[in-house]
Length: 192
Image 1 (cartoon, rainbow, N blue to C red):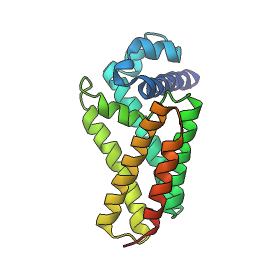
Image 2 (image 1 turned 90 degrees about the horizontal axis):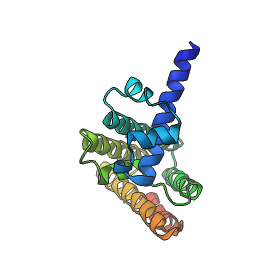
Image 3 (image 1 turned 60 degrees about the vertical axis):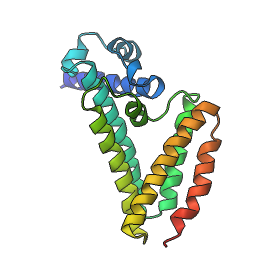
Image 4 (image 1 turned 90 degrees about the vertical axis):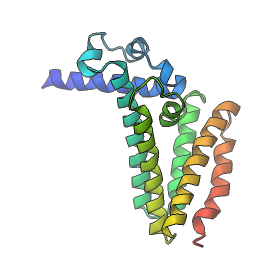
């Protein structure tokens, strides 16, 4: 039992390292050597935990990160206030950016921009973004927005936040996320 827990911790450390490397360096920066160096995992553990090698590790990291944000959207949406949900998302990214000194962006966006050498990555990233948009659209529909408008606004929210993350990294400033929140918040209150 203790050995199995240790193995799970090793795999989780490797996935966490792969997520961080993906966020900071993009897909090309997630190499087996980089993950091993960052996680401190032994070399033999790579093919034990990830028989598909680097590609399986990268896909697992993107999936984990996507699930994390999806859970955050679902939890915030359950509270019923869409504006609060978006404020939580913005606050999460602001904390994330400042904790990493603006080095780490969104792993799903990083994979979307650099997925050509990882089979199945494009489909996974598309599914992640669809889940985020769907969660936001459902919350908007629950707040009285017509379904097609809720879907469009969900696209605007995800696009604006993802774009703001990139600008925050480029400018080393959280202002773009503040701007997005200030401009999107009124849209989330109107139901026409």
